Length: 148
Image (cartoon, rainbow, N blue to C red):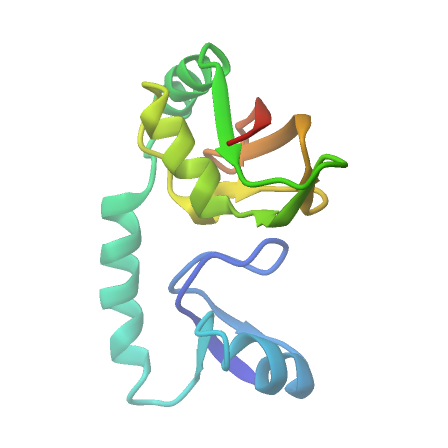
């Protein structure tokens, strides 16, 4: 099935790309979550608009991505959240929480979709996340989750 990506999907493509995926993946995952729309001849017009929006938000050069990487790696991020007695969180830390904590710590404004968490953060302590700034540049960021 041909689809047009509306958001960046890891391992598949960026917003505005027309890709061919299996029917079930598109029908059950990508389209319901808003990551893609079905490809039509009329939808081809939307591709240009999606790509223009991507260019505005995108980090243009590797040098600019490296500058932001240096800023991110110099920031100490502390995230306070509710936790139980054993150190387990009520829920988990989301990418939006991490993006807000980076901004509050004085770091650059990071899109939550660029933050990649290997496993859900459900406990107190130090954790590593990566921020994909450019196709070739990713920053490793240490965050500390503390009880509120």
